Length: 141
Image 1 (cartoon, rainbow, N blue to C red):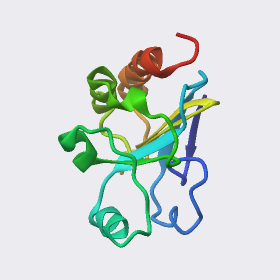
Image 2 (cartoon, one colour):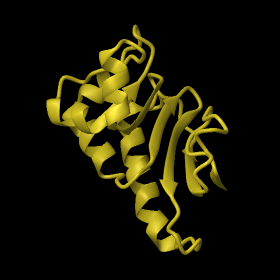
Image 3 (cartoon, rainbow, N blue to C red):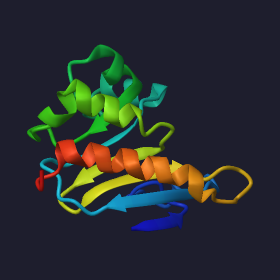
Image 4 (cartoon, one colour):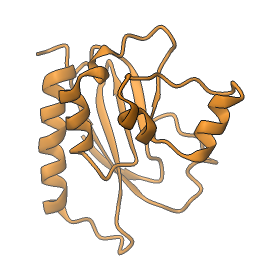
């Protein structure tokens, strides 16, 4: 399922979508074994964590954890994200704006280039990488 909107991922507030950027969202419908969202970690994320305003799940891989901010419930089993193979599959999806794993599937958000034109050929490899990732985190393995 592919959509184009001002929202990077489901559940994003209108204020967060006020940057006038359009995203292509690719939803691969395959139930995941866990629920989590991943985005690039920025200074504000580190600040909010430090003062206790935000919780981030950690994979134990220092370079991966420094680059990505993983949002999940504190008791959520994100053991799949600790796998080096899964981390490599996620890195293969770059550049992305957000990645969301849920019972409904895997949702990848990708910024559409400034020209406002969507190049379908550039999306095909992303979909292939998304399918490859799903093989490792799907309940339908």
